[in-house]
Length: 109
Image (cartoon, rainbow, N blue to C red; front, side, top):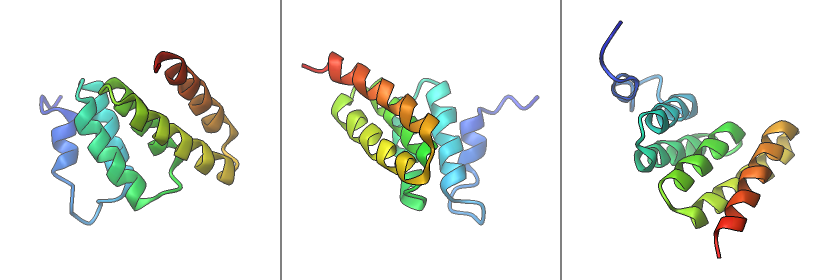
């Protein structure tokens, strides 16, 4: 097995022919798993720039921002993600993001 962290392997593909929402989403999730939420948020912001209707990327962006301690930005990401998910008929993603949003709203004074 390759000892190189997944995020490093994914970064090598950035700005290449495979760069896009899926690559940035995968990189963001790898960085969350590696405990680097601020870096993850950057990758996930790029994912939603590539594809603003990518509800899973919005959900991960909210998670990364919350883990990085930016609760207000996380709430905004979840709100955007909920709107996108509802527009696409992705009811499960919208439901999950509403739960995460409510938790943050309770935590933020």
